[in-house]
Amino acid sequence: MFSTRAVQARVRTFRDKEEISDGESISKELRGAIKRSKIGIPILSKDYASSKWCLRELAQMVEQLSDGMIIMPVFFEIPVDHVKMKNGEGPYAAEIEKYKEDPRVKPHMIKEWVDALQKVPSLKGRQVDRGFLGDIEETSAKKGLEALQNTLVSDITRRDLGAFNSVEEGVSILKDRFSTLKVLILLDDVNEKKQLDALVRNLKWFGSGSSLLSLPEYRDDRDFWEALWKKLEELPDDKVQNKLKIPYDQLSRSQRHIFLDIACYLNGEDKRIASYMWDELKLNPKVEIDMLGLVSMVKVGDDNRMWMHEQLGKLGRQVVQDDLEDHGNCSRLYEPTQAREIIQQDEWTGKLKVLILRGCVDLIQTPNFSSFKALEILAFEHCSHLVHIDPSIGLLKCLQILDLKFCPELSNLPAELDSLEALRELRLDGTSIENIPV
Image (cartoon, rainbow, N blue to C red):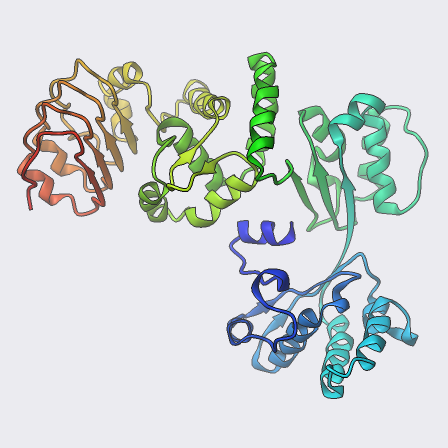
């Protein structure tokens, strides 16, 4: 989970189980990556010293101190004295003794590791306490929110304070006891807002630098995925939407943008094509689509097409509609009737980035595009009677994708199309077009 959160923040991470093989010397790639890094953040947990790779990496970080590297150690659930191996105590000291008995580990290597471990605690670091709550939905239903609050407090303080008389008492204790403590709180299986409100309504309850991870389980099993949605489909629609809104609210800004794009008009599209636009917007789609997949918000098939469950698509479209009604922000048009109404209102046209007019069978010619200069995606797929593209399309200097698929009556493109310098994708399958302006 540390690695996942780091990737979200665009931090390059290295994990020995994935990127390197046991028994090898530190790879050239990894050594080069550490050497090029300005900041190193070793997360020193109780099991850290059991990994020779972690110790090798730490030793190189310390070696790089003389070249200006900044090391910001995180002491995760382990006392600093145990990292120093003071008086030969703690799990790190025990692991070092094991290495001394291993003939494959050379004495000079052990000395480098020990020196690094004793050096790091003198650097500016963070002592992090952790609180973990699992099976929140079940515990809340059987024992109440007070039991969840008690478990969280007990997990952080390592002692049981007894049952709370009310949710308000639990909130008061959380705010009073931990206002100066840096904590990492992991919440699993949150499905209602009141659960979050009782546990972590505001990170200001905790010390500066505290973090919250509230994520559904990372499942990649298709049987589980299908069973979960079958269960949700048995619930009333508003209940389903309330449940789905919780993981949506936990997404980053980039993930929300991509999620809403897929929900409104890119469900079933090739992610490689959509990524052109997202790359231009600096949304880092390669990472963010993977993250959406990890939390089962989006699936990508073997053919690279993105798939989203109907209920998630409905949630995304409702978010866009609510934004329009509450704040007047018209960010995406996806319903043909709504689109035709709004494009006639000059106040909206200059803000639109995506205009989808799929399946408009009555559309014979496109509108004048002179007021749509922010458009990045324009689609007329399955407009079966479309015969004319207005020459003003040449004004769309930001246009990246033009979709004219399955417009069988369309046989010509305006010469102005040649001036679309940002255009990356022109889809003409199922048209009568034989020549493209160049």
